[in-house]
Amino acid sequence: MTGTPGGRALVVSVDATAVPERPVGAGRYVVELVRALARRDDVRPAVWCRRDDAARWRELAPTVLPCAPPSRPARLAWEQAGLAWALRRAGAAVHHGPHYTMPVLCPVPAVVTVHDLTFVEHPEWHERSKVVLFRRAIALARLRAAAIVCPSRATADRLAATGGVRGRVFVVPHGVDHDRFRPDEPRPGADADALRRLGVRPPYVLFLGTLEPRKAVPALVGAFDRVAGTRPDLRLVLAGRPGWGGDQVERSVAASAHRGRIVRTGYVPDDTVPALLRGAAAVCYPALEEGFGLPALEAAACGAPLVTTAGSVMAELAGDAAVLAEAGSAESVAAALAEALADGPARQHRRQAGLVAAAARTWAASAEGHVAAYRWAAAQRPPGPGEALP
Image (cartoon, rainbow, N blue to C red; front, side):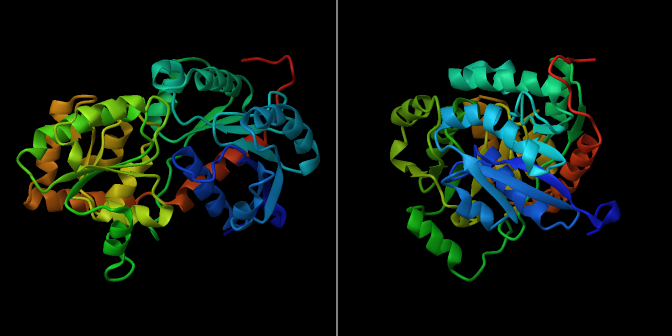
């Protein structure tokens, strides 16, 4: 890898203080991005984390700064006061807020990742306190970030459609960890052992992700009821932790005519996820909307038959690999599941198309796109306290 002019690596401050102990979604993005950045010699990530969370980051990055308080309210306050002050002494050329937020008075140019606009466009999908927090964060990023990273063109277009942006917008897709997400198991029998530990027996339809309103899991439960009658050995596996609004899922499962064949695994450890994907008769990711929808692409990388939402970024990423269903329609999801489960040449074609689509996405390529945003931002002047949109 080629270094910066003069041989000096660009020092990038990365805020990892919001990444939970068991990361999913945006948290997984931060972990994989830091890992990919640390492998380069032209950039040096300096990772801010909670005071009780330094060990895992020291395995990924050369510079770890465990300064943030553990509790969420104190951490948010620290970001605005303590982090802003610490950045003046850290020697970073640019600061990256990878989950919407940044200090109001950031002393160095800032890059902010805006994953999607659902906090603005669909507040009913989220907890009220998070809607307030992230709407303010997106508004601040519009005004004061030197660059905004969006994981898809769809998110970038929505950002442009819903207001002005001071800085430059970079569309940088996520990657896939192809060492983990691949169609072959690491050793004979490894996948069967992993499924046994989870209490999962094939054949099954898999949903993997946080159980929250925008994932449209009740529509999947309704779809499973429609196909289960003709497939008496088929199970539905819901893998993931309950999120805000998870009571909708609970009610749909309780009302299911085939609830005895619905398996709840809870959180699935990272090293077990690929086995769960590879073993699925079909993976269904029926989310109403996503900024990127990485689990759908990881399923394709494992060679799993995929059902996802028509007109979504997941459908755009998967291309011919996925059978598409209408958002939120149990009847449409059921028809798509029946098609995905059917044996024949079309199933094999979709599998190969998924492997090709996933192969094009790597975390190294994603890091390259982020570094382009960092370089752009580092060349800009951070706005003064009274400056607004031009």
